[in-house]
Length: 158
Ligand code: HEM
Ligand code: HEM
Image (cartoon, rainbow, N blue to C red):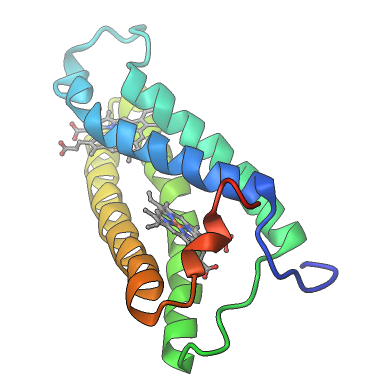
């Protein structure tokens, strides 16, 4: 738990946010590499898709530790209660999904497990949908509510 309330994300939190966004997009763009992965020899090197995904996993763990120890700024005071709750759960869902999706991918690849591959597919879809909702909410705040929420994740001002 954070020792005292904070009113901004730290530079590391902001940097990790955007680095992980780029890596997740890259993992999606490179997912074709994993087609027919069952046919690869057992000792085949992990394709770039998987290496990027594992990087997401480790960076998310780091980010989670920072998040739990340091905390995060409270939601804008003007937000209705349901939006605060929605943002809270969406953020934790993103942490969970971005950690569990690579896990399932790892099990699929290293254990040649069809079940894990199916779980990986469901999780990546949930990650995509949740990230899309999250992005839509961030843009809604910035351009409709106009409360400058996006500046919380601004690389230059942090
Ligand atoms: C955040 C990280 C990751 C994302 C967003 C992601 C996303 C995806 C996507 C979109 C697909 C294509 C699914 C389809 O066409 O049905 C896929 C397939 C696959 N990924 Fe990942 N992945 C991630 C991490 C990993 C990691 C770390 C590994 C392995 C160490 C991995 C192994 C696989 C495998 C084996 C498949 C093929 C599954 C199948 O054929 O059903 N992925 N992934
Ligand atoms: C793969 C895509 C994304 C993931 C996984 C992701 C993940 C997250 C997470 C977990 C948080 C909560 C941080 C915390 O409290 O520790 C967050 C906050 C935030 N994200 Fe994202 N994000 C993604 C894409 C985006 C995009 C595209 C935008 C901008 C359009 C964005 C804007 C923001 C903003 C403004 C915050 C701060 C919100 C607040 O403090 O209430 N994110 N993001």
